[in-house]
Image 1 (cartoon, helix red, strand yellow):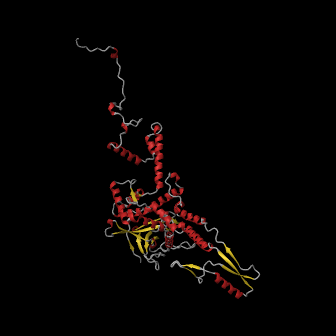
Image 2 (cartoon, one colour):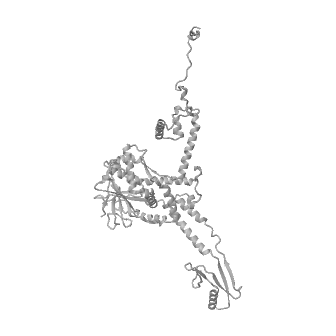
Length: 553
């Protein structure tokens, strides 16, 4: 009997028993729903492609050893994981999370702890590459069973060929058949729904588990609880066979075709490249046996095979070895044209490699890598983003999708760590996980060009619309629809502007003349806040003013 080790995080309030469905959970992890007595992990090999996921992973790893595939994988991994001497390859982004600063600080601290356990700064490239090639990755979350509140103690990588994820129906006593038992009526609530058990099987011998783990004769393995394993897949699933695939899967045929074309090209060039001669030897009326002997004598007489010894640098006559590409010696009877020597030309189209280039581009396209990156074609464009090829734009989006999928690994580890340390509850995590993002370090020149050009275009448009602010547009409209600022950005920028005005970093707009942009002259003593009024004229002003009396002369 296999042992169950690890841990399980149980929800204190499970789903209401009234909210049920006859359909089992459909998770995109390549795991089918298996009945309690059925086999799992074995598929019919009709097309000769693969029999089990075990064979499939072996094929993926063999493909990765091919130089062209390895170059494409390196392009993808280098785009997705950017290593910098100062910054970590990935950081957690909590700006959209509605939580207190204390909770956010704890989450950031625990995420940094997880990255330290993975040694992600140093091993990020290898971890991501293994996940991309295999199409899945397993990590065993090791905790202290006596003190689980201390969190994860170690994250141990597990070879994908030694693990199997199983979703199985629990068999109860008295069950005669593994189907939904209808009780009374057509009401869905009147069905007895099966209880699904999920676990992992670990086999250290790299032997793929087949059959029921509890049955006799099944592959020996260890049952591990679902919560004790971090399991992250590529997201690609073969719907027909229920197998989880790698992004290398669709390149299998293209790679095999490229290999065959290259091998046939080598064989053709070796056999067709040299020029060969045909010796027609006149044997007269000699009998067949003597004619053949005479032909051999002539052949050995004129045949002078020089062999170059690369070890000693000597050139010697070596007649005992037969070359792969020999000349032709043919007898000719009396009445013919006598002894003659003619030459067969070598291959004329040996420089044609158009078919090789076609299949190489096909391979790169099947790996979602732009063919322009093949062998450094096209160089590196430092111009405008509009000059960037559409393939590069597609490639950038593809890498972004891969990053999103790979982030599920961090999500699972972080969830376990936060729950074990009682920082959050399972109910809180369901709400918070949607707003937790992971910010990968970017090194894509195209994205920088695109952002710079977008900002330049927006500022130019805002400058054009400035005379119409207050007439056709409001300030808020310009900021939201032209500069594309969000509510959060508007609040943040307003607060920063006020702070910088208060600190004297930037001048107060109230002291700037909007027409000239120059600061107003405060020494003139003019109060710009109040309009200057003309002096009032009353009736007393019509009378002659009384002149001051002067002194006596």
